[in-house]
Length: 207
Image 1: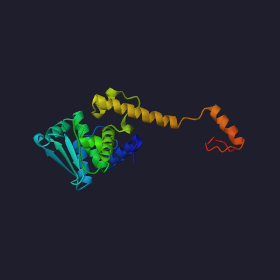
Image 2 (image 1 turned 45 degrees about the vertical axis):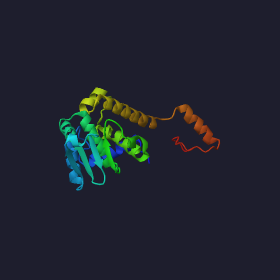
Image 3 (image 1 turned 90 degrees about the horizontal axis):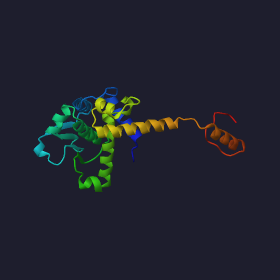
Image 4 (image 1 turned 90 degrees about the vertical axis):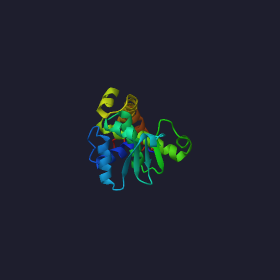
């Protein structure tokens, strides 16, 4: 089943709430991992020498419930570098979405990531959820600029720009959904209702 951005926002917020981080801006990723380990006893993470993981920056392996990451990614994550934070958030997204298999984040997409529908779907969901975990909509102030989102949430310029567009669209859609109908449309529907046509829209009257 396809997950909308609203679905992913709810998943991320519920996840952060369970960990006690719902209202914390930019928690460090090791805190996130440690809290997951306390919540889920069989969750594991492992630091791997770069030479032993030449084709990917990090892995999520659902059978072992294990997040593995290059040593260089771990060190960069501890320094708060945007790419490393996103890499770890991507793999944690696979965990959170209960994706199955041996999944990873790499610079070049594998054949499976572009040809096997299940893998394509899982990677797309993780790609979309990761920046939401790092910069959830409910913590982004109204009118925040790309630069504000970058500095506040530790995202790259590209990720912050995409996140701003997503949040702006979500809020605009929410505002449109609550916008009252124009009076001309209300009058037209009332007249149609008076003539006996079925009208399901709530017009705020008892006629």
